[in-house]
Amino acid sequence: MSNFPFQRLQVDLAALIARTSSGQRLPSEPVLAKQLGVSRATLRDAMRTFETQGLIRRRQGSGTFVVGKVQALDSGLEVLESLETMAKRLNLAITLSNLSVEQVAADADCAANLNLAVDTSVLCVRRVIRTDGRPVAYLVDTLPEDVLQIDDLPADFHGSVLDFLLGRGDTLKTSRANVSAIGATAEVAKALEIQRGDVLLHFYSQLYDETGKAVDYSLSYFIPGYFHFHVVRRVGG
Amino acid sequence: MSNFPFQRLQVDLAALIARTSSGQRLPSEPVLAKQLGVSRATLRDAMRTFETQGLIRRRQGSGTFVVGKVQALDSGLEVLESLETMAKRLNLAITLSNLSVEQVAADADCAANLNLAVDTSVLCVRRVIRTDGRPVAYLVDTLPEDVLQIDDLPADFHGSVLDFLLGRGDTLKTSRANVSAIGATAEVAKALEIQRGDVLLHFYSQLYDETGKAVDYSLSYFIPGYFHFHVVRRVGG
DNA sequence: CACTATAAGTTGTCAGACAACTCTAGGCTA
DNA sequence: TAGCCTAGAGTTGTCTGACAACTTATAGTG
Image (tube, rainbow over the protein chains, first blue to last red):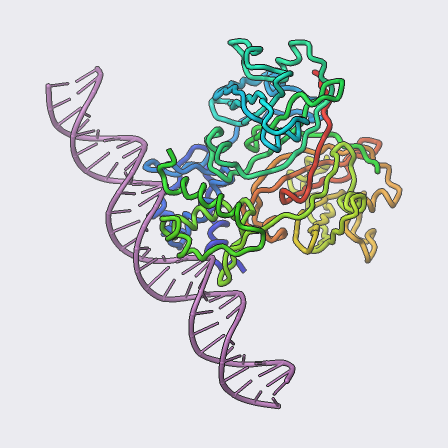
């Protein structure tokens, strides 16, 4: 088995990456291809899969580097809290960037989740969460106009929609979060400064107030490794 | 922007795949490369990322095909139930294959999660869940010897460790599940018949009985799209 | 010292070729 | 006729060599 160059190559490459410490540069492609006994084309093909996993990063003209992980933020899923609150609780510094607040027309997906008609005007809040300067999460919240308007937000709005609503006195009750895994789309990849198709943990959730009205439709994309989400499950059925 | 062939190509390829119905074959690589105005090497590089996302499947000598999804299994995460139970509740047929039960020495990771010493003998149960004949989940349970021994399992054991323990009368209490996203390792990729690096939803969880003893360390890998896991989060902090 | 031009090294892309594999159509045999 | 076998066309997998685009360090220049 493993008679195919591509598969054998992946094993060798994985070992090489594993024993190379974070931030170090790998040998150049021509050198590495000769070392591993394959052509440069096949080597590049295999490297693409490791880049997709976020294990390495290639930069034209510079080289290929092994990327490392930092301390993770850990949180239970039962309680809904903003990433800012989570970070404060764990005494970790996170920053926010690429904040964008704009009024858009609801697409089919968004309209269905907010229980609105398609093309209804909604407010869309996007931002990137960073730790150590590196993007680790991309968040997109969409809210009906009667819940939040663009002028409601203060000039120094720091980006947590949940914290803002709570601070304003809104009576929120629960959130229904769906968890999944996806490859990064072009938009998400650009925001997170990763490659399209890279592995991401994905939540899409609706936030309800005490009357049962959907007040927020939220999409969250997390680069694996930086966040640890857990949930306590009770035995039953 | 998008001045690089690779990025432009991904946009074009995504559109092509989107408008191609499930199971259909894409044009051959030489033809497609000419249509899209890039070399075959660059086209293959871009295709690798879509293959990683599970959107297409390439078969040597046969062609490249668009893959489609089937109905999804949906479950709340608060309640721990086996996939078999979940499928029965939703009236969906799932089958089990590649069942492997073997006694192994606990590695560091496993020992820590089961609160055992390294190299302690433990029982490892692996199996693949399929719907419609296609692999959709890969499950690995590891249990201490004093909880489950290889001879305890009946000849017709159908694969759900949780159901077996419950049926035996074990008093289980809760499970702590960590949710993440990863690229498939070589072992997992082989079991799920996908490519190494493909996007997977990943749970790793510990199961506790009523005395607080860890009785099961479980790793679960799900191909996205076939399962929908959700959790209700209460507002608070 | 600051700035610029140069050169070496690296990844990105291209072109063409052949190998390995799949599938089909036609011919052969029983 | 039914079944098996084989040859061929078509497809993806891999290789070779080359050049373009980009980064970085170096040496030179004001």
